[in-house]
Structure formats: structure tokens, C-alpha cells
Length: 373
Image (cartoon, rainbow, N blue to C red; front, side, top):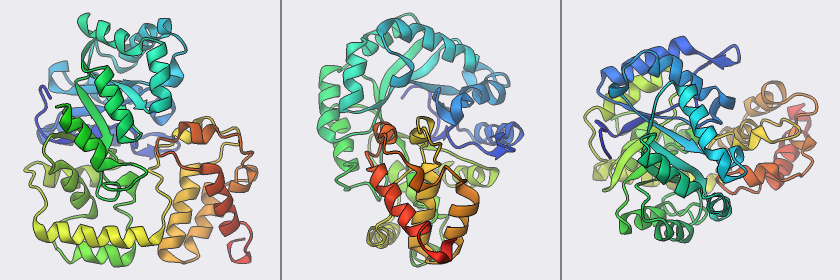
């Protein structure tokens, strides 16, 4: 991938927050640390942070650094265009929001069997290739959330695709719902450079059960995040691993071990295999916290947060998860039991979770027992 200096990318998806808004002062410091340590790849999308992510790119990156100092990726998401004629104005809006004249990489966002048909119907790929010829995009790629056979279809129909972003981590590596390894192999077969998203599974590979956490601590070599990110970065053909960093501590940690990256050794690989076994036995909800489900929810249920509470209960078995569910994550009318089963969340979920059924389970866990009231 052209112009990339190091394998760690800064995803503007989970930025630090203060008083309900992006903490721009802290984000400025994070951007500075990232660039000062030789990293230069940034990733955003129009829907991240409810439309504020691109503005944060402008304020914290584009307004403060010359264009040759960074590589910027943005995305075309299906909910923002209904016909071919909508795509160019949308891209122009994105360029304006970010205060740049071109995107280094422009990805057809969250491709799946269903969304791919919409992109084809609207000639989205053809439009992106035309925009590349005009210089508004340097490279056209896809971000992908589906089975390997669908990825094979897309790359066969559009061999002009230059890069593929896939969900890839040690927990999803051989998960039949994600097919991380199979999707990786399809990319390798077609000779496509790979960008990794969700290397720490939305924080699930950082917020570990105590017995799993102890296994990694016994290595005395780094944070839980470091093993997950280094796992992903160690595969041949993987050019970039994204991290949605949320504070200064996370970015300082990530740059410390990715500045002079080294793959996992045999001892570290054995340890994460043990962690994976523990996590699989916990039967956790495989939500990555992307929040795509939240935007369309008519009841404004904080779905990723209530799932996080459910996972925390399975991990720790203490009262704290119930407190967060009832007093932090939900309000009257926005509890799991208030779901009206419209299905909009499931249509938006990249993990293809059966969210409506899962919300019933959450409600049964937290709303029907006296210990959680």
C-alpha cells in the first residue's frame, strides 16, 4: 500500500469523549503522538460518531498538518445513497467535511451479499473508479463483513479493487460466523493487500476474564491489546492494522510495540490460544461495539452497551454489571425489553447478530431479577 510507513492505523471511530462530544484537545494530542512516532494512516467514515468523525479529521489532522504528512481513508456507506446520482455529491461533502482535496483510499463500506447488490445497482464501483481517474480518490477498495464466498464473488466481479479491509483477530480466526481466516485466504488468492479492522474485537480481547488476563500477564511482555494487534499484523499480506484508540494511554501503548513491530513468538501464540479457549467457553455476545445498530433504533436502545453489560456479567458474575445496565446504559423506555422487534438493528449489524433475540436474553438477565433492580 502506497506511502504507508508503519502497520498501525488510527481509526477515528472510538475517539475520546467529554460532555457528550469528541474531546478535540485530547484527540489533537493523540494525533501528534501518532505522527511523531512515524505512523501516518488515518481512517474515518461519515457515520462514525454520528457524523462528527470527519469533522474531527478536519480539526485535529487536516487543519494542522500538510496533506503529504498523512494517508486518509474514507468510505461510501449504502445508507447515504439511493441512486447513482447521489454518490458524487456525497463524496464531495466528505472531502469538504475532512478539508482535503482527495482521499488516498476510498472503500465501498461494509460489503455483504445484500449491500453488494445495492452498490451494483447504483454503479457505485464504476463511479468510484471514475473518481479515481479524476484524482479525487487514489485507490479504491472495500471493507467487508460476510462469508468468504461472497468476498470471492466481489473480487472476481471487480478485479480492479486494490485493497480489502476485513475483520481479523485471534478469536474470529476460525469462527464460522466471521470466517476470518477464510476471508484472509481469499484476499491472498486474489493478491489484494489487507487492512485489518477489529483486531481487539471492539475491546473484547482487552477486557478479559481474570483467568485469561493472568495468562497474558504471566508473559510479562505487554498489554492484552498488544498481543491481539501483533497477532493480526504478523500475517503475510496484512499491510495495516486499525485501532480505534480512545485515549492517550491506548495510543502510547500501541505505538510503543508497533513502532518496531515483531510478530508473536511460539510462547505468545500458545498463550493467546489458551485465552481463546477460555473466551469461547464463556459464550460471550460477539458484539464489536461498532454502533451501526444504534442509529436506526426507534427506541434508542444502547444495544452495544447493554450487550457489554451482559458479557461483563458472564465474565465477572458480580453486581456491577447490573448497576451499569440499570443506572448507566438504560433509561425508562430504552431498556432491552422496550425493543419493538422492527429488525433495523439486525439489518445494520456487520456481525449478523440476532439482536432481537439477544435483547430478550439481556432483559431476562437484568430486568426480571430482584438483585438487579
